[in-house]
Image (cartoon, rainbow, N blue to C red; front, side):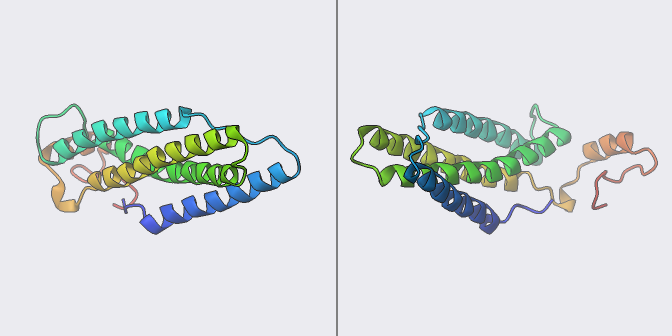
Length: 171
């Protein structure tokens, strides 16, 4: 699996921020109620970050040949979770930055100041989530020379017609 390009993640975040800002700004200018952000997204982002770090460390132990609770299939799941977290996190951070930008245009209203602070804090925590996701995804990349005899046994059971060969689309 090729790692996710950082430029792609940045593009998702920037486009999300721009569209969010334009959409919420137009909504507010036509008399709509602003979207109020609580610190809740930051808590969810922090929990996702902790799960990624915990499972990513298990993948590193697996790659180093140390005893761990995770296996090769679990490492693949961690890689998918990390990749998804990077893209979804970039999009959500972009939306929160757009909301923060709209809130900063209305600083004369106290609730908008609170909204800008909550959006900003959640955006920072979300950015940490995205960075951790990119790092963990790179931890999950397995080079062809990383194969061990234990993984061949599992692959042989998964694909009896090709014993000893890894199962996957690029094989």
